[in-house]
Image (cartoon, rainbow, N blue to C red; front, top):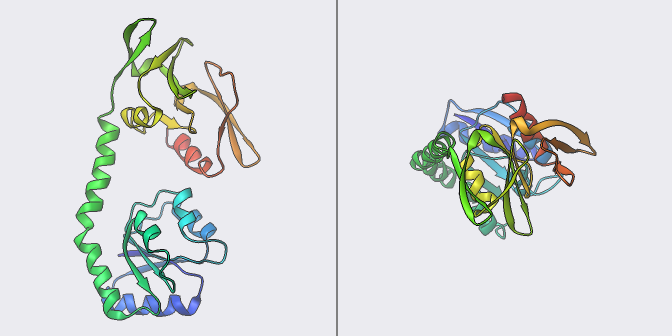
Length: 245
């Protein structure tokens, strides 16, 4: 079992790894001591089966990690404070262990992971299925009529004044009766990227991009009437997506 431990107190790391090793003797541990270090590790190629996250770290609280990267493995939070229970449950929290951690509570928490393994496996399968079973045509408004646009003819979607628009490869703009969040699910995550709250773009519509103060400015074709920016938090995911394509 590959286990990620996020903890900035080395004595707590030593105690926790010793306790886990008695329950799961063949475990491999990766230790991170800050939000920044954890984000960097999770953006890499490492795969984990379970994570133990202390909540209060030296540079921030560990909930900030989930805002910057997708964490798709179960998490057991460890802390000396109980005021974060509800927030912990919003993430992939399997359990919430108060320090000092008792061995019997730790063992029960790890047993929960095995019980819920099928749940997380089904989540991953569902994501893959959504990508594969994406829509091939989209219904749009052209004047008073509706027409169907092929997926391969779409350059990008954007939102303006709470109205969604589709722009095809020739630059024609259509109204779409769906919010961008729902359109993103219909598209799948292979050839389209959710650039920000206002734009979803096909990879072929991305003419070029450049870094600007940690953010990324994207130049789309057909051209837009405004700057299209990717946030600092989303920038690493965008670069990885571009490289994978």
